[in-house]
Length: 213
Length: 213
DNA sequence: TGCGAACCGTACCGTACGGTACAGACAAGG
DNA sequence: CCTTGTCTGTACCGTACGGTACGGTTCGCA
Image 1 (tube, rainbow over the protein chains, first blue to last red):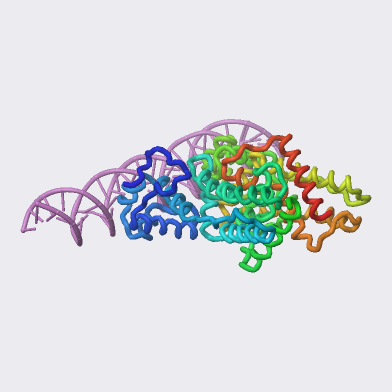
Image 2 (cartoon, rainbow over the protein chains, first blue to last red):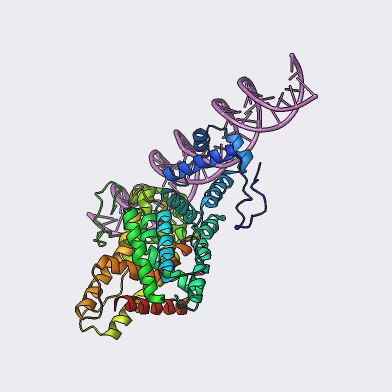
């Protein structure tokens, strides 16, 4: 049992702590597939069936259904890797390219089936448990943490002009995402394809630089 | 029985169609209170208890649990009234005030307990039913519909400069909302108070006018 | 006053599911 | 070969809940 349900809550920054065995990872990936298909309303029995393991093993490994769900979210979150941001020798074109690339990568992530399923589950379970916290940490907050050095470097190089990092991030976020995420979560939007994503990323970056450049 | 479960789906634009009786409205408001408290995981029995009515009556009026949920969402949606937008004799100051007022009103709505509960339920039920569609219609889409004449009037008056209404709306939406809605839905954000909302609305409007003015 | 409709409260039924127990397969190690 | 531990598959239990049935009450109305 690598992570009993009653263990002390892990600090969200350390994702190496979740050292799942290969077999456990098979199980968690099966849960992810189930969540994409039917949200967080999967039954433990269906997980056992999909992963060809016994319910007893699931309870032994993950404590209870909530532990299984939370382990799954943590596992997926630990797979998210943000693109590295340059911070030395920044030119205007370099900054623009970095921002645009970041925006495109972010739009791609939040349009993905997995991200949608995870966000839905986290929205649903907010208040009871740490799912919302986890998704937030690896979502907007992680994005902000990654972007912050780039903003600061841009300001240092005289390419950006702003006061608070918090607010400049929120504006960039808004320009990039717009109403895409809420529409996608509500299930009523055609997901943007790569061409559309590239276009939006460039437009958002251009507007952002028009405001803060 | 004003709205049996097997009736033809109503077009979303006509909200007068849902002519609920006062007693039914009491029930629906009880459901709303329950949803604020515990999301869409209320039991039919708890609704009956909270509204002091019998389960049989609930099933008679609303068909099944889903009908009750969807009637509740429609009822709440029909209560949302957007501020009227001026469209004649538009000055720069008038446009700015209208946009800022709209933004503040919108931020107030999406920070409210009811909106959060409804959005959570709709996100959760996306795919099975029309909840997502309804919330979307009275959410971002309704906002866009209301804002469109203002944008067009602003362009006509030479105060705004843009090509597509769709895109200008999405940008305004992004500038106003930023990451507020997703953070609130994920349960990890202090809701902004009125002062904060006013500040954000003004900032967003200023930036919007800087981009499109 | 008698009647019927609407409604309340509650008991009841079937099922789905979380969680546990158990029997057998299989591998590791002495 | 025997033992021990881990795993699978299945059967099982208790409960919560969606949905139905029914007796009793209130109220409008003739």
